[in-house]
Picture 1: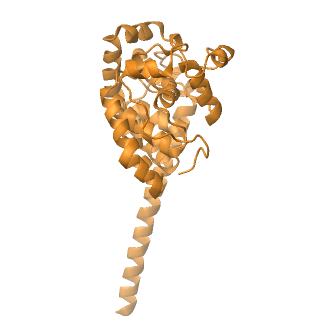
Picture 2: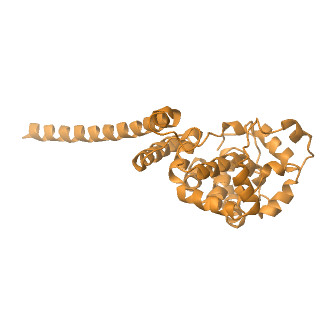
Length: 284
């Protein structure tokens, strides 16, 4: 009798281990699918589909769901996996992108951006000119942000999984404007600064990816930074994200000489309540 009970108990444990192992394998498989799809467009674009834009990878709703889950798991494990964050944004953001596109269409300057489709890359920036601009100008402060935080606009991945050419540009513009938002909001690229920007972006854009980052980002902050977020930076970011003009509707490339404060006033963005240092980029 004792032997039967022991055998039954062992079978239960084996069953639990098998189920846990299966779940782990399923998650790993989903992440592998995401990595393979995000790295190789030839599987789709050269066989039976010529793509809506260069680099486009058409996917079915089921594939998008797998991509969303897999990239979400990878992004939760490592928020600095920008490739996974990018895939998550593309596979979950269609409704928000439509809303952003419509806001841009209804804004004269935003409509010009949609029509001319400017890109923010090192190849399109005149760094010498930006460096020659006076302190306080938008262009000079943007260059200072890049230098102080050791970042470059060329790290922004190209869109692959958005199945509409115009919406794909809206997503691309959002990515390339992200560092400009850091400049406008006065936020560095450490974890507290990134979370504050995500709170602003979640309120401003409605992108699920931003909302997820806004909810989960605080989990990586220590007590003192959490206090700064919840008592000052967070409420300021959400309030300004809601009331500000659509940040994608500004033709920033034509505004380098304009003062940072003037652009903030035009966008209806208040100065930050706290000044954060750009040091210790990934500190919490």
